[in-house]
Length: 132
Image 1 (tube, one colour):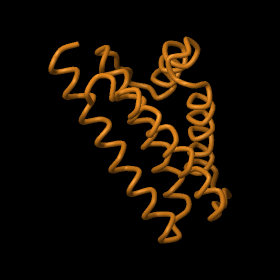
Image 2 (image 1 turned 60 degrees about the horizontal axis):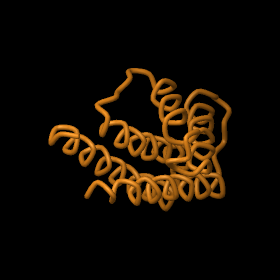
Image 3 (image 1 turned 60 degrees about the vertical axis):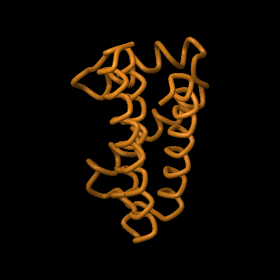
């Protein structure tokens, strides 16, 4: 991998961590729907950080998640739990963002926050092998 790929990976994982902080703020500020949105995006940015190491990118979220699951989860590079939690975060984010009558709760947003933290922690451990 080259410097450009490493820099993009670092940028994306930094973005994931910043977005996770925002998600945490949303939970503590009782902005639960926003927290669910930010949790998904934090995890999504972390997944994109991994893809940056291969210079892989997609325009659509479903393509990013599909590639990530196929090449990192199904192959055992990252634990299956990461893929499950990412898919769950994505579904909840879509429900929260697009269902007019979706009511987010403290418990729901805290669970999403824990999932996002798990995904980012796991990906950071994986990236540490690349000095990122």
